[in-house]
Amino acid sequence: MSDYDWTQRFLELHQEASERYQDGAKTPSSVLKADEIEWLAEMGCSAQEFFDFIEDFCRGEEPDAGTALLVAAKRRDYFLSVQKGRPEPELPSSTLPPKTEEVKDIPWLPRLIEKAKRKLRGQMDDDLMYGCGGDRNFFQKYEMHPADFLKLVEDSKGKDAEVVAFIVKRGKDLNV
Image 1 (cartoon, rainbow, N blue to C red):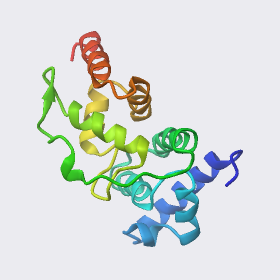
Image 2: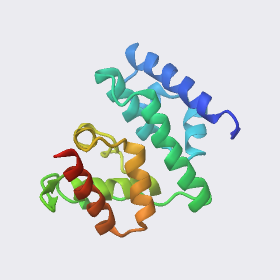
Image 3: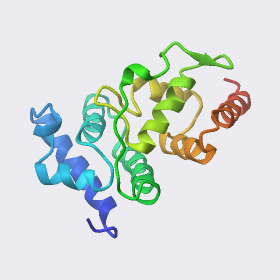
């Protein structure tokens, strides 16, 4: 993988995969070719994660290619610099906080924090998507980009209270 032009290749692949999806390919293995799956894996992105971005984009035009790229870039950086290119095992989605769980009267936040940790570490199982509709509702409400939330979670170094405090303050600033 060329570090110089990986972003351009990612955007080209997003376009090609979107066209394949619109032409009837509806699974990760039909939207992506074997060499593309291998290339994505070299940066810590699974075929399912990429497919989820394609499927949601083709169905509702979000998240867009730029958002997918920025989220992939944050994961890629973590995968290559922190994990030294070594993946961690997936965790079952059943171990996430429930969708209804709240912290400081903020719904979805406990689940989103855990999803962000798993996204950074590459531990999302195939039933999960970082940036799903529920996540996007949260990000829109708090006017925060999904990649910026990943950075916030990474910078907190496991101190969830710091993430919660940031979101509480942001909510107050935005009158949420």
